[in-house]
Image 1: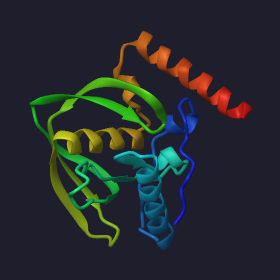
Image 2 (image 1 turned 180 degrees about the horizontal axis):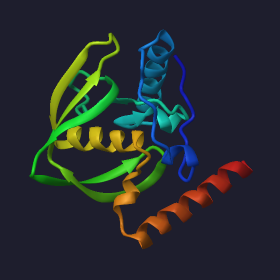
Image 3 (image 1 turned 45 degrees about the vertical axis):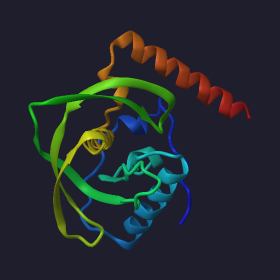
Length: 173
C-alpha cells in the first residue's frame, strides 16, 4: 500500500466527470486500499478517485470519529443516490483537495445509495448525519463538483485564490 498525492484545487481533473467502473480489477482493489491509507493519513473521512488523479467512479470513506469505536472503511464503486429525504441538514464541509478551507453546505439529511463493493456485489444502504454528507460530497467529486461550487461566487473566488497561492508556495519549496 502507498499514500497517493492529493490534487489541490484548482486542477482541471477535479472538474471532470469520472468514468463508470466496468470491472473491479486487482489494480482497482489496490487503488482503493491506497486511497483508504491516503485518506486516513491526511487525515480525512472521504476521498474520491479523481482527487488522486484517477477518473474512475470510486470513492472511499470512514466517518467513525470515536477513537474507541472500530473503524468502518468503505469502498464504493459506481455509487449512486437512489433516494434522498426532503429534510435537509447543514454541515461545515472541508475537502482534502481544498485544505484548511471550510464552509457550511446544505444537503439532504438522509440518502439511500447503491454501489458495487470490492467483491463485485451490489450493496445498498441508507446514510444519515455525517455519513450522508460525506457520501454526497464524494459523489459530487465523481461528477466534477466541489463543495465550494455550492457557495456564493465571491466566497468561491476567495477560496480559489487562496488555493492558487498555496500551490505557488508549494511549488517554490
